[in-house]
Length: 157
Image: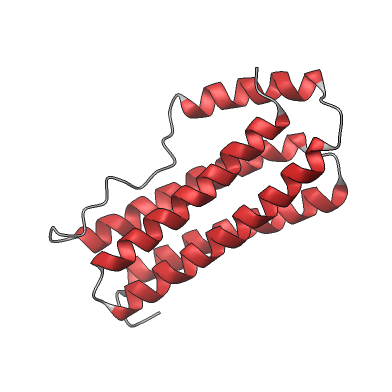
């Protein structure tokens, strides 16, 4: 069985995965415009992870709701069966590696948005729900920035 804390743990892990991959990718990128985007994304993931950690502390104070546990289990089983929430496949050494990285980052961000949208149903506190919606919008903004980068190319953002 999964608790709401388990769901939040997954959200935290998603943010850590994103940060790690973006920071790892920074080491392999020479183009300053790509490096700037990757650093920004990594920093954003850190901030989101902090918020989820705070949410987890608040949730621990609330008695566990069986309905939330059951819903969490169902969602996690569906998500974990199909999504990796990882960008490990990115190969920056091959031609087209940066473009591949950006495309995989877009998919990662889309998967993250999908997970966080499902996560919304767990939040009953208006303030937490509003904050999660802001994070979802920030993740959508990440997608937009990455897509614009692909369209415009380096140095033209």
